[in-house]
Length: 176
Image 1 (spheres, helix red, strand yellow):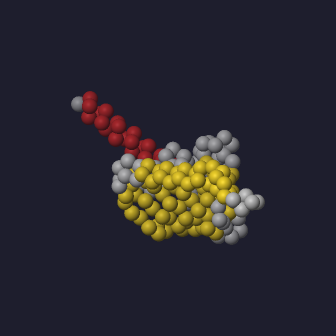
Image 2 (cartoon, one colour):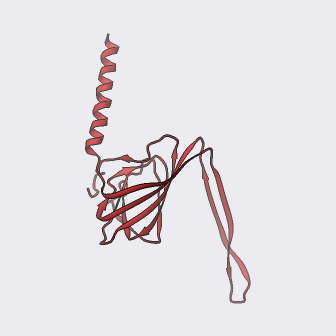
Image 3 (cartoon, helix red, strand yellow):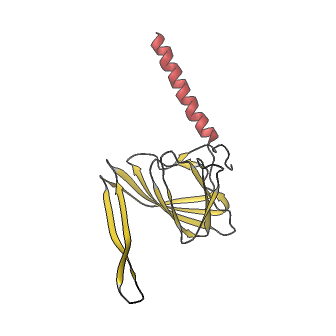
């Protein structure tokens, strides 16, 4: 009998937590999102390397460094290409993703706020620039604080079947 009461209490607490999370979440505003592509991939092991060179005044090519990249996943992954359009004054709302995203700003400018950065400073990215959302526990919001429409294209790498976006409450010390 006691185990039934414990189970009932667990169910109530989980339900209250889910409800509380939904109530505290910050909604998007002035945002339209389209999925341009979605695919599932097996284990990824993407590596790349190159010798970076420069041409000297004498016309000779000389190595100046090495460039490396590495992306490795274990298990199935859902890959997304997402188009976000944000009106002036609009926001994505505070949220997180279970995996990393590569974000390209293709129009206007967006301001990214990351919840775990001291003072929650703004990071402004204009058209032609890009940035990385590490995913996992990183909570962030994008805002269009400009006067023209902003647009981003995001490439997301997520565990298969995971929610693409998780709404989050406003982190302490960050703008609502």
